[in-house]
Image 1 (cartoon, rainbow, N blue to C red):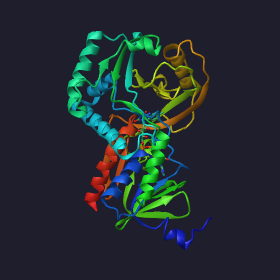
Image 2: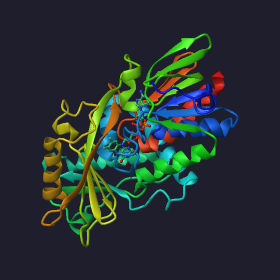
Image 3: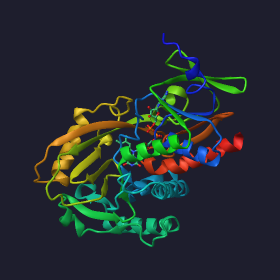
Image 4: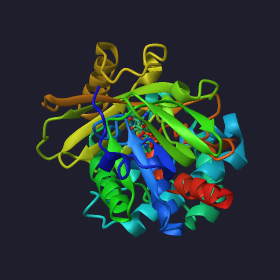
Length: 380
Ligand SMILES: Cc1cc2nc3c(=O)[nH]c(=O)nc-3n(C[C@H](O)[C@H](O)[C@H](O)COP(=O)(O)OP(=O)(O)OC[C@H]3O[C@@H](n4cnc5c(N)ncnc54)[C@H](O)[C@@H]3O)c2cc1C
């Protein structure tokens, strides 16, 4: 047993006004808004990873707010109002990121985004057109653009894709470097006086009088007046009744490709496949729909099945005839549930959670952080 010193107990591990569990984008943005609104608050963020170890540093770095087929599918499943609410949160979130951080510092690049519609999807052209028109009409009040989406089929040949029938362009979409954004946000909250501690796992918590006692994997507890749980996919481990399931997302990155023909972020098949340029390399992820059961896991490794699905897609559709090697492979864990919507709740007095960010949490996190901070500050 390693005993803690009185100095440690009275500083790093001292009781705090607020403890946030999880230093992914949601935990970090929440801390930012809490501190911004009330600089006097003492706040700790606790993460069990050496660095954030869930989705925030392991994603694809799309600065996006939804593709046409995905938003239409969302409208069918959660209804128009909720779909638009979420799109608005993502859009505002991306604006917030750009307002706070220098674009160069976070690798923010505006190459636009696209959705590929393939021959095999058998999509009726008139339906596609009317879906685009309908979404453009609805999104006008969010993006203030008459045409958020437009058909750009002429670029299919230029980009060198095979088997694509249509290409829908969204000039407002961009890409960023998730690692750099996470680090910049971390540095920002630390500069505001937030204590960030890694390598401590919160095992459970209980209310004792008016305080929340947090039991850790080490030989001491932490204590807070308010608790915020931002553990996304892992929410069930602390809150067993939460409607949040893990959904692993796998990614690969190619070697540099001489004269890569495209730049931008690309969606395919309701967002189940996604790829982008990373300089002159290609980052490709997804194919979770090829093995839902297997990808319902907390395990941060990759599988042959999904990686080979990705490689086939890369070879047949994105880079036909090119030679390259696969230089990187990894996975991250998303939080999903019965409804494609984040959960922001006060689960007990002074215990809050902001989880289930799905596949677009980079964009969602700033608004979720802002909303949860407001609710917590109204309580204290
Ligand atoms: C492969 C992949 C690609 C993606 N691509 C994109 C994209 O291009 N664009 C986009 O917008 N979104 C994308 N996403 C989704 C996005 O990354 C997530 O929605 C977002 O990062 C979620 O942030 P978070 O802070 O809620 O969770 P996380 O980043 O998962 O953070 C949760 C943290 O909680 C910590 N934790 C968990 N349990 C405990 C505990 N008991 N004690 C202490 N710490 C704990 C974990 O270590 C982790 O660091 C992708 C996700 C994946 C997996």
